[in-house]
Length: 257
Image 1 (spheres, rainbow, N blue to C red):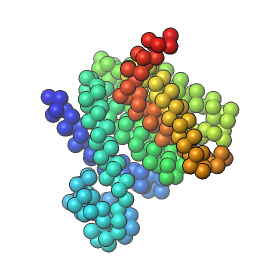
Image 2 (image 1 turned 90 degrees about the horizontal axis):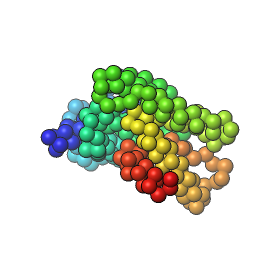
Image 3 (image 1 turned 180 degrees about the horizontal axis):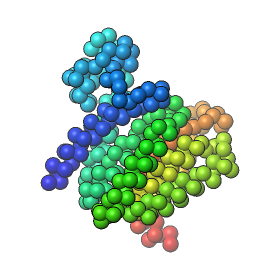
Image 4 (image 1 turned 90 degrees about the vertical axis):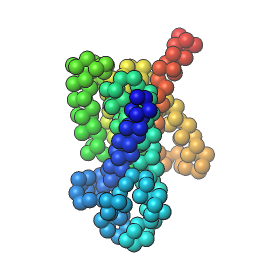
């Protein structure tokens, strides 16, 4: 049953990852994610159904458009693959199907938002607001049904994580954008439903990874005044927390309290 569950989550994850490639390409451009159908970014040719199979089509076509031969970025299949892996990880990590079904698409969303932030230096409201509404509604329904998610802690996590970054944005607006604040609120909402230790670990890991990333950028020659997108670091902290929060929290409480 575990293998079957992982396989099903993996297939859904690949399909969801394919959808996320559309999201990452179209949303920053203000385009619809519903229509028209997927097309080549270079020549605009509409993709056939056989050319739109997650991961497999890119491999069969050797990363090129069938119509014009232009190279298709490996970011597309890598997004699909990573999302599929994260879905499988969520299926194996959480015994509760409700928790796994919430965490899997949330982690895929972290991948998509990281790609957008790296490319365009934005975290679109068109993604964050509907996600907050959808995950909030899901958490509320599962909590009322006794499915093991905690709606009250989800709210606390959202206010705590989003509120703390809002204070940073107010004090140092040049160092923290409102998109990061909204992303932190989304992370706090979803991870808070699993437990507040998940939110705490996400915040700590995000700051740690962000600090290491900033140092690496400076070593690589980036200017101190150059803006570095913080969204991917927040997303990385969320991924760490989703899979390692109980262990990290246990070690911290055992050795530092």
